[in-house]
Length: 338
Image 1 (tube, one colour):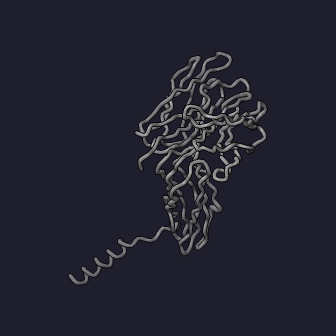
Image 2 (cartoon, rainbow, N blue to C red):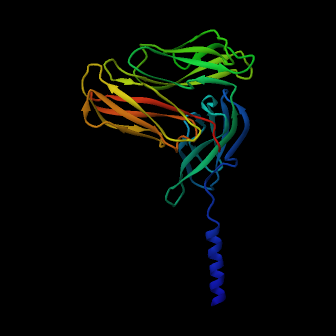
Image 3 (cartoon, helix red, strand yellow):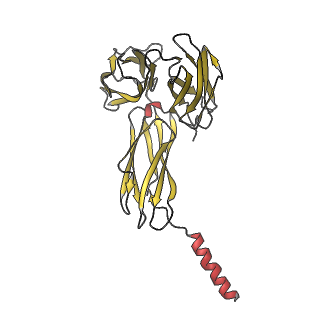
């Protein structure tokens, strides 16, 4: 009997020590890109494989810890042996010098015959050491307005032969770009070039994620992509100040906060029903009750301050009735130790 018991325990140990392999796998979940220049987009494609022998796999979400990532997924439904390609593009303009790590969580649901659906996720990473010879301030543009608006980008270049932006393209006809000549720097400062991004007054109402692409005469930096978040309000909607939040974090990764005021153009009372952030590391507090000016406090926490990012804070109001405001939020982080 003891020998049979030992045999049973050994078999039990073997079955518990070797659990079934996950149905969704990536053979190279970490992409080490080495040294890269800040400015040009950094792209990598992960190959995701349905490693099961039966059943349908659904990719249900792709979550990035940084708003600097653009993503394209070739397929969201896989049969056994099929692959999906997930291409990620990092906007290195918003990233600090030094070692950087960008994490992506891919969630999935596995429907297998005769069994309950299995939920799971895998973690993917891109790593690189970024060095910047040029800067773009701000690294992304946010418009929250009921009419026409414009913002100026300042491109700095520390090299002896700086680049020049020669032309531009936009993702929508409601955005236009004016390119000023490069201005020489003085007293050891880099030369700069001003780029004005304009939003047309007749742009449709609503929230849009757009982009401006700047083309240069430098083969090392052929193009610079600037994200543009547009919140076009209807006439009579609230005035929001500032209409976009851009924060500069210190290298100590400490939390930082700022205030946003909402005011009715007709001097009526403002009452907020709820305020939410679409980034878990960005928290919000807001004034209660009704008043002429409502205030939202936006905090980028230590958890989010480890790398640059962006998100949107949405404000739903009961006064004025039915209005909703989206506030673009971005933050850049000083040199990191990762």
